[in-house]
Image (cartoon, rainbow over all chains, first blue to last red; front, side, top):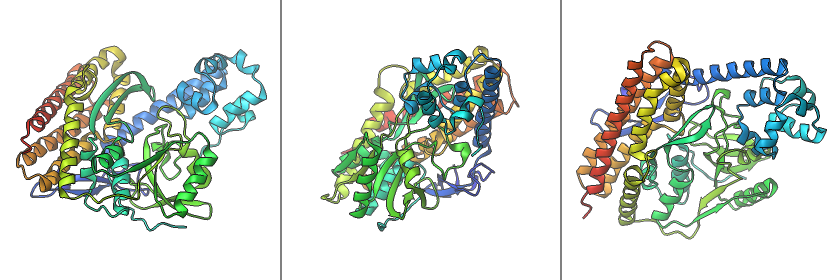
Amino acid sequence: MKKKDLPQDRSKLENVTRELCYTQDEKGEYTTGLSKGWEVKAKALDVAWEDIKERTAEARAKVERGEASPILFFMELRLMDLPILAGYTGFWKWTIKRHLKPNNFKKLSTKKLQKYADAFDVSIEDLKHMRFNES
Amino acid sequence: MKVDFNHIQSAHCENGVTTNLLKHVGINEITEPLAFGMGAGLFFIYIPFLKVNNGPAFSYRNMPGQIFKRTCTSLHIPVTRKKYSSPEKAMQELDKLLEKGQPVGAQVGVYYLTYFPKEYRFHFNAHNLVVYGKEGDNYLISDPVMEEATTLTSYELQRVRFAKGPLAPRGQIYYPGKDLVKPNKATIAKAIKSGIKHNTMMMLRVPGSIVGVSGIRYTAKLVSKWRDKYGVKKGGQYLAQLVRMQEEIGTGGGGFRYIYAAFLQQAHDYIPNDQLLSISEEFTRAGDLWRNAAVQSAGIYKGRITAQADFDVIRDQLFEIAEIERGAFKRLHKLNWK
């Protein structure tokens, strides 16, 4: 890629940083240039976030229908899957799977609920009612 | 306390940490491309059974930590590396090192990295940065992918050092040792050769079909099946994932090919074999083609093109990339080093 072809499109990194890229000068020698963004990448990131939003909305609907516990909603909201949540809570994956069922979730002790609340960065009350601060 | 440390931006986090830490101990010859090449950073792997953000998992780089490790070992630079089970101890020891004037490389998770925009914060645990001082409760951070140096509070730094999930950093820190002998031109030339040899092995000789050049071919075939298997929308999401793994900060697939091309050009200064320059051009071509494949993929995930033929175009582009990289590495393999 030649330095003049380095894309300078809008991206989510605007006002945060530019990215350093390796490009060639006129003689074909490599130098570096700074890129504001590339719309191909920006769109790929948008696609990922649209998917996350859809999944979070679906999870909320599922919890409201009584098909899953709020843990499912917060997992989607915080982009976590079972191995990651297992890492943050210290629970086994199969334990979390049990807690994903509404009936099992209702029986959880405060201590266990607190572990989930900490992992999701919310209070126990907010955890139960699927409330959160957008931060 | 503040260590006199020079923040220099780089394209990839681990290259940057490596070059900046080496510069700090007075080794100025090692540029980002040289570190990347000596560390045998170019790679490709498709990881079956593993899901990342509900999509398939790819990597365009070798295992985290390897670039720093290989670069230092091949230059005979002693390395100190430590993991912790106790966050408190991890922070105390970091403070002690900073007091002694030692800037420290650290592996961190991105999800709680507050200076990144929210949209970039996924649970990715193999990011690298340098901590070079502490003022009050704020740690001074040199994150090589950022234009400027930045800060994190002690709470924030502890949190990212102890991020959980796959590749959890476990507070890992590393830095080059004190009693080192500065590498001369011959040592650097030798390190370059060893990096190239190792990279050739990784891309061509690892058995199985998911690693290296054959991994690219495997992925090509996979991509052409996504439309039938998952439909246009999900197929598009998977392609977007492939592009993000390829081009995002710190992972860069197309970008990595350019860094490797730059590495071969710089290697020529130490090993005057003109073949290196022409092989460098091959990697530039590979980089351009990776970017073309990304543009084609974008057409699909933007919903502009949706036919099976459009997925097949990507397959053929990836096949072509695989052939170019195979050819380039074979030429590297056969180089007469003298």
